[in-house]
Length: 241
Image (cartoon, rainbow, N blue to C red; front, side, top):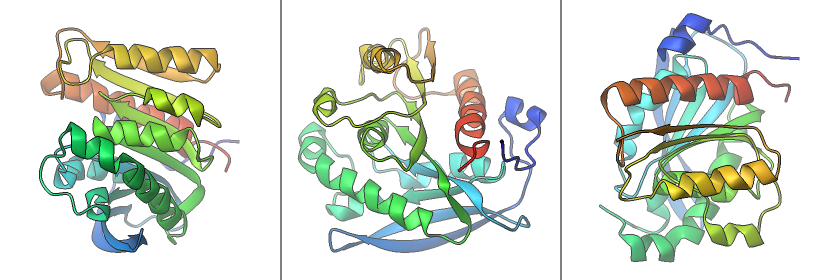
């Protein structure tokens, strides 16, 4: 049985929200460190909401996630943006060496973030999805293959670390969004993830944008955000917890 949250098909197709959003800052603990988290919760709609945890990329731009969070919160999702770099004291751009060294700690922080989110009064703990960009997409996929609390993942220009095949316990529906000309994260990463999902017979959707590099803009963003909203509605909001 589906659980409806009042989002109309027109709003989803256009990638627009239709409700007021309450914003606040909070914290949770991970690895003995205080992790800041930005919270975006629908206003004027009591009860528990499906939740999305958003993960920024290697630039550490959690502030850039606010636009996506407000969009989804306006459509009925409670959205949380953890500052996962707080776990390792990382500031600025995380280069490849920094990302490799800290990736396990960040993954544990995401696990703790899910625990934090599922305990919030505004959240239906049985309906939690992940949204990740680049490095954040790799983190989302890495946790999703071991944590059954994750119902679905939307990953922008990321992938699944090949090492995770040794730890994979399960999979969930995934939306893959990637630029065909991505010089930072090659599009082959998207195709590898698709192959894994196909072999496991896991539902997925995939859109490769011709001529697009790493990071989206213009009409590509409009289309990607529409797909994101529709996918999360289908696989997170409208499920029986």
